[in-house]
Length: 93
Image (tube, rainbow, N blue to C red; front, side, top):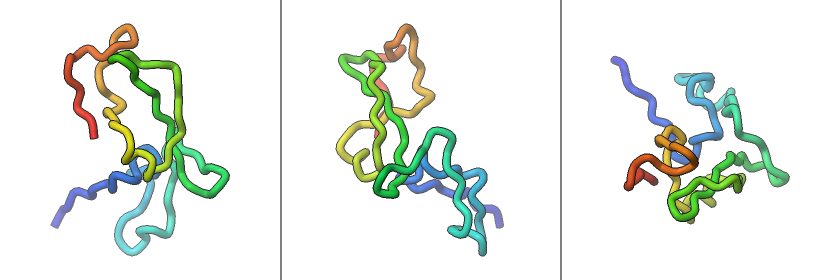
């Protein structure tokens, strides 16, 4: 049967779910996402822009998966216009 492969929350923005194989080869080859990089300690980090008072800032922070637990993260495709969210409420994890 066909099963949809779920992406673990710690892999968002770090591991490419399209290029990383399934089945017997799972875990043998992992492709990094476009914007991810490896920090000085060998952890995968990905960039996030901070939002203050509902407005996107130019402040970018590179975070590890464990650091995301301390912040609210909105999807990258959240509609923005003139640096502000177009909706009053934004879905976040």
